[in-house]
Amino acid sequence: MKGLWLENQQLELRTDIPVPEAASEEALVRVCKAGICNTDLELTRGYYPYSGILGHEFVGVVEQGPDNLINKRVVGEINAACGKCRYCLKGIPTHCENRTVLGIVNRNGAFADYLSLPVANLHLVPDNVPTDVATFTEPVAAALEIQQQISISSDDKVLVVGDGKLGQLVAQTLALTGCDLLAIGRHADKLANLEAKGIKVGYADDVQTRSFDIAVECTGNSAGFDIARRALRPRGILVLKSTYAGNLSLDASALVVDEITLIGSRCGPFAPALELLATEKIDIKPLIHSIFPLDEGITAFEQAKTKGVMKVLLEISKT
View (spheres, rainbow, N blue to C red):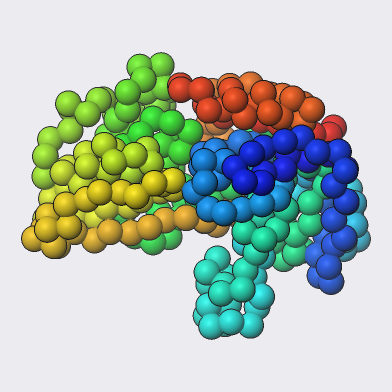
């Protein structure tokens, strides 16, 4: 089968990759569409020493698996857990000590004709959700994870730093809480997407120091981290949603003196994400920049790396 293979930070389109053999309690999924995200780009820059097929945001059709899933569109949670370690036994499979992670850790990903995942990881896509829209299930779930980790109410003043793909989804999901929200970025057109949805937007200069209860950093760079940290009141909460390819410099003394809570935030709940997409409570259509066939995957990656580009999708097969 075809797939985008990463090795030694070099990406190539290969045509000689074996079709995965689904293990016990796993399903074989024919990939229809998949999205290129910042983590994929960071992997090509050496964020983690991964070799294999990239990609973890996908919609596919089950070809081998339980009868109730055959020929059905699905999305999939990316962490394949062992079910036996201390984290699995505590109901925290995303931190399974023996997990593989689709397109990231020891499991070939979605930028290929086929992938395999545990049946327990798969979720049916509602009939009214277009395939393009459903490819955003994983990042929407990641945005919702913030609300799984901390309580956010209308009394909270919240800052989202970053107007890229992730920042857009984080801002839209947080807006549903009714909090006093400000989303900042550097691009007028991207901020206009959020402003059109009734979200207050601005630039770095609009952020008052020590005036927010919660700040969510979505840029993946040190400047964004610094803006988010300085925006927080004492005992504020700083949520990190981005992966960083390099080391991050920070003022640890300021975190200690102001008793700032620092939270890493990663994968989130798929069922609520699909519900939001099905009820159109968030809008992802303006986020799709372009769609490429798998054969043009290298070009798609180059475009995804281009400054200012939003989501680039790969069309791998027809639904």
